[in-house]
Image (tube, rainbow, N blue to C red; front, side):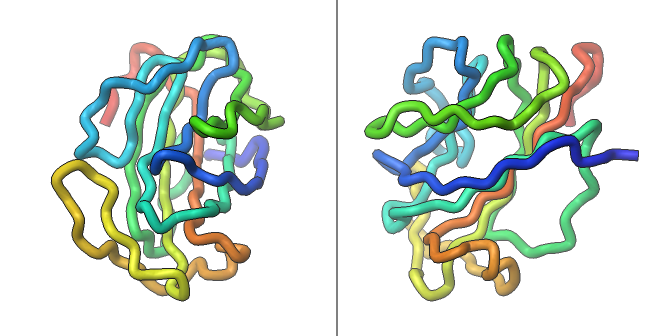
Length: 169
């Protein structure tokens, strides 16, 4: 049975329509990734593209023993990614603001799976897609509004260790 090991909440101001979660021992750079995906990843780093209307995002990071149970909530978007975290110490990063270390405890360094889920403020909308080649209005399902805490976007990032031999979904 999966159990929550640790959690940390903060707010971030995305810059250039992205913010990221990075391993502090990795030299970060802007990954040359497929900008038609919400998550841009490279070893030791994951960046989320956000709509240009997002000024402040509320972020909850959760460390889990194994894959957490699926959420019953409706989200504007959700994506999973697998990434190696060679040091295991994390920071939130923005281009303008640099890194802010987060005191989230991970079991060890290694290969991790992350589930990113997000919603947008119904009061602050409409929000347009930041994805390359898309400019449609994004869905804003009801629910989770209390988690926004005055922000334009709320992100839940659930992280759990995977075995190197496990097949990814």
